[in-house]
Image 1 (tube, protein in one colour):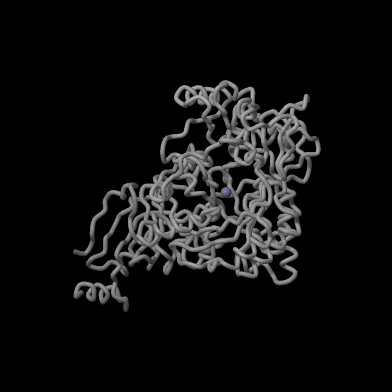
Image 2 (cartoon, helix red, strand yellow):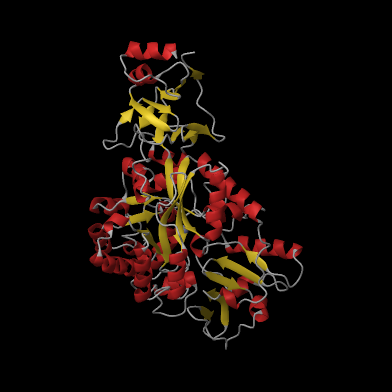
Length: 577
Ligand SMILES: [Zn+2]
């Protein structure tokens, strides 16, 4: 203590210098208001206490017990925030066994053959979730392709759309006479025979046993593992893009037992196909609302799904999909624009009820028709009471328009964008919509120029590997795509929508924090904020552009402590003893 007082006297500081940790001689990209670059950061407890030049921070903050680490010029970013992941689903997806890479029809058939060899006859084979936009053939498979197994019912899982083989159709009694279920469709060929493609009609498949359920403990382990993997990737905060009661319980238990590897905000997902009275009752019964909780675990927005997915052709567009769209997605009707899951009246009703409970509002919207529909609901609510303070936002909003962006700005609606989709899906989508038709596909430049705040994220849902997952949750991949707009086929998708490295970093830090009402607590390296940082292996701001995707974290500091397997920088030594 005497030394501390002496140090304080020596530096002329009135506050005793007692930082727990000082990182100095680095390049601290603070993402503060001026986007300042500093050399050193001092941390006490779980808070940043000083940011500045190395000499000044060491002089004023170094005490007898301060651990001092020389960064050797390494770059430090604020801890990265992924605004949209599905952590439990991702964790469970490879909890029992690694998933095969299914990127072509041949790979799918190979998978089915191998499964058939070890599965008793008559039992279901499920092809793990795969999107046709990411298959070499760029086409939805039909029953013939899956008929490589004739003694097993087979289901190809593309989320809202599934494909059944001939035996599966037979066992389920699906014939040319079977009527479409409500809101669903049994696709038929030119002769009126089912093609095997079922849209929102998976419930027609009989005897489809859900895979052996995971125990509560397994789910807890899978979730914890996934969150640890996020942390190792340089992510210190996530927002889960859609939680139900079980996720809430699991996250809660990890927090209660001190096992949360990242900070978590949870967007509560409500199945809007339930009757309005039921939705209203559940909203009433839920004691929580946006911001209930603390910076380790809290509630974010209230979410419903307005339309389907662009990877499977159920996104609700402003125009019909056209001939290539019909091939890609296995569509039959020329006027098919995709699917809207609830009427405009019901959407307004749901959103009004959620807002009355104090929720920030959001919705899964892919097609332009869905975006416009959500903004219509927001406009009606905005008339009653300004919506801007709720920081409500569109999730995905893949097919934007200048008009919709202008409405967002006017009402203070934010965007929750996933740049990785641009990389993986535009080569196929370009064939459907044409290059011009993708002018406003994830239009990051237009958002920023219009003054719309963008939160960046991955929509990770399947796979453990940060680069091979659907979608890759490697934040540096997301930053790289935001900056380059390079696609998986090597082309650049509308370069006029590229954003700068600084702007891209804001989408993963301060703007993402703003979206979750946490911008005063995190999202930048500033005195008073939570000490969440990531030290990286090269300079994000000056490395060759294509190296951005290759950046790896060297160390992750979360809540003031070094975390996980990422190795600490060398030259670490305690100072002042
Ligand atoms: Zn999602």
